[in-house]
Image (cartoon, rainbow, N blue to C red):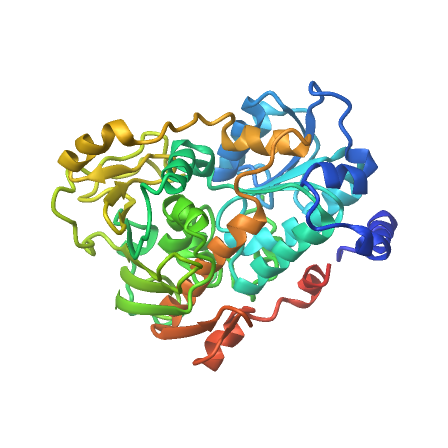
Length: 479
């Protein structure tokens, strides 16, 4: 049976269309949404946020557990296209009496009035429709990184956040950690100043590194597991026959579904530099070197260049991204030991493997060079002798008042502002969308930041919008 809009959802969309002109985009997230949607008001600070969770296996399981651990939410609905599969059992056992759904649209129709906020921890290609429907119904949204698979989808999500005046948070949890507050304090004190180059690196083995780059076609179809709604899993993506190498994290390998190493780790490595250096969108993106390039899944290794123009008094910046086990970046003298942040959550298929260089970045400023890891790990001035000389003059760095999940729930109640709202996380995600296009097409792209168009490659410009969504999913692009 095909899904149909309920009268309640149609009424709400109509009401928003009529009243949209009166909503002020500059209003404080959380408080504005409470005014627009009276059923989301909270009476006091002890009220809990009623949370619906879309995606409850693998990384979704960790997101649900982390939100629940805050003690600030009631999980009122669980949704997963593979409900009852082994990877969903932990959350199902944790919440045995909570209503369960395979289709998020049915969940909103049946329980919309009981839901204040939604977590979205599903494959990259499915972030968009769930998030857009949730926002159109006045629900606050916590969405895993990167925001969406295509540049246009991210653009529409940013517009939706402004239009529907809901609280938004992208799930790059380090953006509420120590590095966020350190980078902000050091930049304001001009310890970090006049940055001209950043090296970002992620050299751990990836899921596709054992595959054959000479692949000539997508894998042959296999029987669909009895627990899985495969058509719903595909969502707006073009049709593929089911294969086990598309699901349970494997989706990250394919251009049709995921964003590769850049989309997976870029938001944990480059987030603070992108925000506090006000980088915005690049003017040039180049696939400098790709090993094992093919049209189906991501290369064995990639070196990508992103060039950002001058912003006010800040000079142009070039970010160079390195992934691949042996595709190591140049390391400056005095770099020292490469350390792994112990707070990095392990992937769903096991522990993070030790590598020659752990995920992180090197930031080249006018007078100082910094090295840093991933997620919330802090920066160090290198070489160590220089760090010792400056130790007494470094500004005090405040502690984080809340972790990323608590920050989101407090923002839903109007008590804090999220640190990675779509207005901040959207342009960062679009940098990765552009980088993936350069990878996919193995080329150099010129980008017009004002018009948000690729000017030297018609196919790449068309792919900013992705492939046409399947008919039954087109409505989400018009909400």
